[in-house]
Image (tube, rainbow, N blue to C red; front, side, top):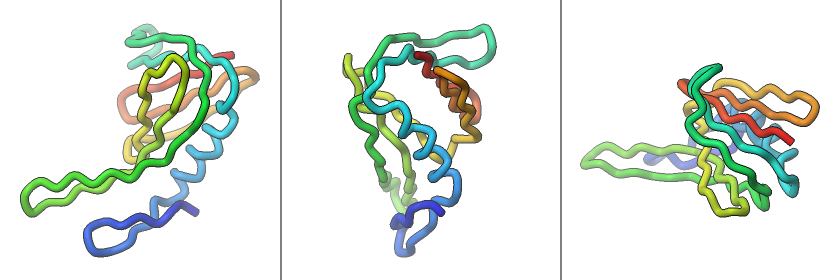
Length: 114
């Protein structure tokens, strides 16, 4: 299952999506990748080479007046230091291929290619 995190005054379970994303990301650590952020098959927004040094799970709390928003995300710690955040709330699926990982989110996808 997922991890429990504090949401307001209660604990919530982040669900199976967190386990799926965490398992997919584990294979990235320590290897050189070409990271590609795209919105569709032909539109690339960002592309860079990197070595993933660490994968950090983050819990962020944003308080706006009486409303508290909680989110769980993963941050990829990499060389050259580009900050990449992968929000669990937008994650939809992970696909692995030989030498590649594609992570799909609501309106975009990240691809990591060896």
